[in-house]
Image (cartoon, one colour):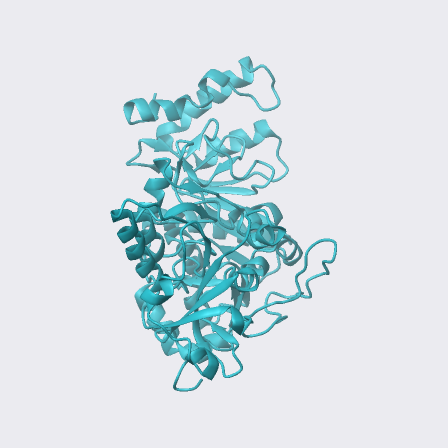
Length: 504
């Protein structure tokens, strides 16, 4: 990579300040920005846009935008714009406290959507035109090709469809990321679609750079700022117990001949429990594993380094500061083993099904029959969003949902009679795991699922209460296929709202 990250002379002439670039975004626009789980998001233009919005508001004038990204971003983007009351509508995923509060106060419209659907729904025209795209890259090549940074997300779609484009060239990003990406340009709209020629999780089917019509690029901004590298909490005993149950189950599946010795491509959500599962896989003797996932976090870097994981396909990173330094110091090693794809490929339902992915994702709660709520506390307050979990739950070979059996110091049971919000129906959930144990729901009727969930996953403080509900529902329910006592089905949640505890 050349010393000047902007090797194209024509685009070098369009370098402006972040303030000048932000001035090109007008009130009411739909703005699509890069970023996926705190990596590869624009660092400077959103901050200046938020300042401009605040100044306009101080004059008593309205100024908001509709904001699309790949997934969650960071305080410099979601946080800054939310604090400035600058977002009218947000999609498809967020994790910022200020944005979340505004959503739950009813002041910010939010569309929660499967990540595999975003690009195609925008191409279908469901959300109108994209006025401006703001995309972070690590470099611009001499021919004008854009070298992505630490996430790809929906950037291809944003660049293809936006009327005007602002590019941030971030020199903090490692130059060695060049060559790690695989941007597939073979997608099309129905009825012109063709099979995606990806047979193995490590196949390369595209280009290493993003294309963009240079006439659409109205500004280039030089930046030098880090991704949101949030440290993970140390793996606790609860996470280790959950991981141990799942790994024992995977070993059992191998012994039964339902999984090969090196499993199938892994997909993992972000957080301490998935990190504990990944660490447990290494200790358990698994080797030659593969990942076809959305996000690479600390645990996967460790598995790649130790040779447990042969390669990993993703669309972005979520690394702690220490892991990020390890990544940058060993970029040549990781470039040979990591492939970064567009979000519409990393989460593509047909690919997930064909590759036979094993999905491992967190949840807020599950009910007796295997329905899972992964987005809403007490059925109404959004946490982050469904993200890509549904893409893997419905289409993967196995879908495991993981959670401690209680929350809020034991006042909330993660196993309830009926979930207060459904993201993943009983038809899409294979396995539920808490620190108490694992419930394998495959091939079971609803009533048998309920008993397995109570016996294996419920916390002892709530087990008798769940058994009592299920027994009475089995006796008194209007129908006996999926027994429920409708006046009581959501009473646990109301009890917590009224008293601060789900305990009867």
